Structure formats: C-alpha cells, structure tokens
Length: 102
Image (cartoon, rainbow, N blue to C red):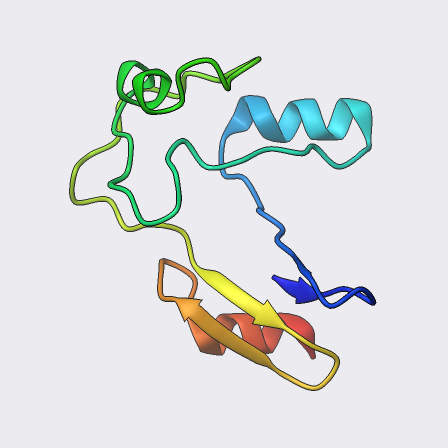
C-alpha cells in the first residue's frame, strides 16, 4: 500500500500464479483485482468458498486449486517515500523487502 496525493492509499499485489503472470506479461498493463475474501474474514480455501463469500461481485476468477488451511497469507506493506512498514507478515520478510528497494 502507498499513499496517494488525495490522502487515500493504493495496494499492489505481486501474483505468484503462472497463468496470472503470463496474463500480465501479455497485456503489459496492471490488472485490478481483489483478494478472494473480504477484509477481516477468513481466507477462501477454494473457488467455491470464494464465490460464496463474494456472491454477485465476481466477473472473472482464476482457479489455481485449493489452498492449504495453514498456508501463510501474503505480506502486506505500507510504502512511503521514506520507508516501508509491514502491516501483515507473510512469506516475504522485511530483510528481503528492504534489499529490493535499495
């Protein structure tokens, strides 16, 4: 997440799914998407769960298979011009993030 000039924030997700990565490469443009669950709710572990949680709100989904209940959620970071702050710890740690921005 990063601040915008209007005072809101933008979030960016870096996918780790071969199909989605290929889609992004082909279209060479950002893809607006959301998580497969609402903020604060449990993770959807399969497409049926996700579609049930988001009934009527999904135009397209990519079925990457079921997710293990113990799979770690993605790392969420707030980034500003001066620093980064991890909002939710996940598989990408602070050291790796700091190394990437140097």
